[in-house]
Image (cartoon, rainbow, N blue to C red; front, side, top):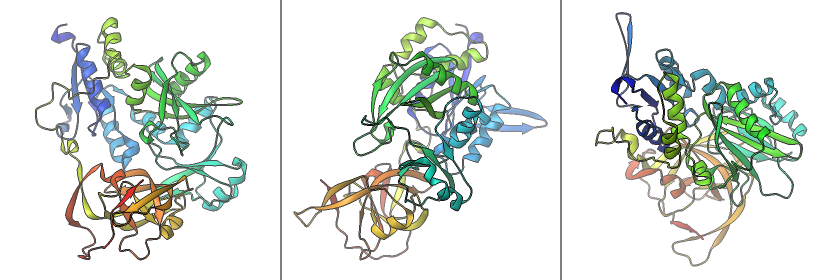
Length: 450
């Protein structure tokens, strides 16, 4: 292929993600030129009425992880700007619709695609007044969230709020088949084609099926009814996306679409099916602007998930995102449950496998319900103690982590929260940094989960 025939595909991603690398490598593998639009190399200039993007690209594949961002409007503005200059896959308006779960439900219902019943009310009173219509158990979730974050199963007596932290939340009908292990189905759609599908099973002591939370996966591609495949394609088309991971669940009375994810991960799908969506996304981008792709090469590349560092990158790290961020010996964090959020000081403890929160604090924010009982022991004791564990969302430095934390009475301790390795594994601990400006040394002992 001559240079004149090459298409330069820009993958817009401000995170050092494996999916971004896989798409870049797939573009190169198909004989075209990849470019990673990232924080250290992207500039938009307006000079004397002329607009330019550096580095120049012919087409953009949007991989902005808006659900993980504290201020998604900033990144939506960025992709909106770029899409006015360059043909873009997963344009800003469809992306905004997809990452806001209630917007997704409204659009799909308008296109006569089955979705679970939902209710969002700006009034907390109204939300609780209508709770009874969702039965004994309901799903309560934030309108924006990812990896199972901001999602709870609530009983009829549990009070919920119109907002969880700074994000609107809503009630949703819980759809399960009795006496079966909870699962849903992720169908990966690129254009009008289903490239693969997998069943996702909830891990033990959980009901959420997200792979990021430890759920199991199984190939569903050949098992998927044709009507469900068409349902996934129709959902992607209705939202207006070029590619998406469509999550569906089967009930006694048919199938329902739960979410349409514009930046669905590849790892679980490849693990289950042996098929990578990356070459199909690369193909779609290349062909959008008139480029050509060899069908045999596409098939060959789809059988490998190449998420290695792209060859065109310089030897130095792409950005500071390659290295873990620092976290202090103490940090100011935001804890979020079904009833609200609290800002508190927390202590980092690399000896604790699991984050631990105070009983009273857990009750205040509505952490729960109790998922299981775990046993822990302290370094000075040979005996173990039992503690309940609950789901909680922990905000640290602009990042949000959903963890299953243990609950204990910490009223006699200096800090109401201990950050364990379930969170600290994402950071580099700087023991000399204290955000509370208090030189007190806590006598708390490290704990180990049994």
